[in-house]
Image (cartoon, rainbow, N blue to C red; front, side, top):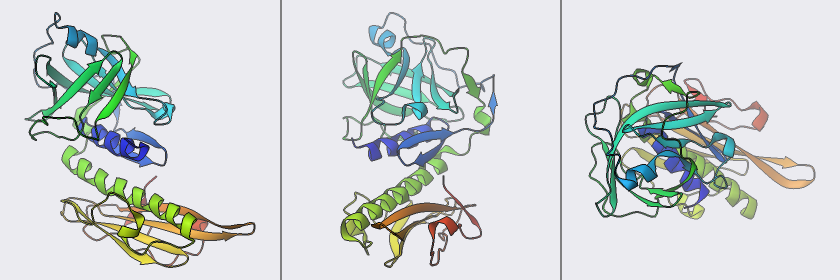
Length: 308
């Protein structure tokens, strides 16, 4: 899996486990709502059978290999011995977590893992595999969707970083009642991630061709022009800038616009700077960006804001 794909699927995983995803170049972080020392009540689920060797092997903290992402912002998944799990985010030097509950079936092939989120009637049904200190977790699913029967090319691989069977006391638990709608955030994460990917593809294209691509096909990225939630298009391509848009197809979603600006440098062919603007509220019209002459002067249009 490429670093770009890892970032995309970690963002989706952040969303499904109760955190708002945030993509940035070279790293994944999860923004969190207000924190409290007390977790919200979760739906009842039986504790894991302690005699199950697979259940014992799963206990502890897991995260993506450090070479994939910046180590300071690597989100982790923590499985405790009482059937509870936590998505742990390291942000600004602090450990923050949101709680979920889980059950597993180690005698199934492949092994099955159910993750039950607070406030959800149905669990995330997925599959996993354990080999020593390596955990493979299928992330191409969400609550209410049938369990995948096989691992995909997008399966997430995590490494064990701790064998602790209980969540450390220095981790703050996030109040699940303050988490925004997960389904909406999951869909919006697609639009945001794909616009970021298109922006970076345009930067690479400009570096090789000294011009911007006028259509998606030239960028050779694995992004469909239209998905269930968004329509993607290159709205404007000039010698100086290119604008790409993600138009929401559903009224509850935000829309996104990306722009890449080329500036000539005294000692080089030029450099590019990219920005993403998102609508402040749900909207099916992406932000409109006119001609920008200098990246330092760029501002998102009224009714939208920069995605950092």
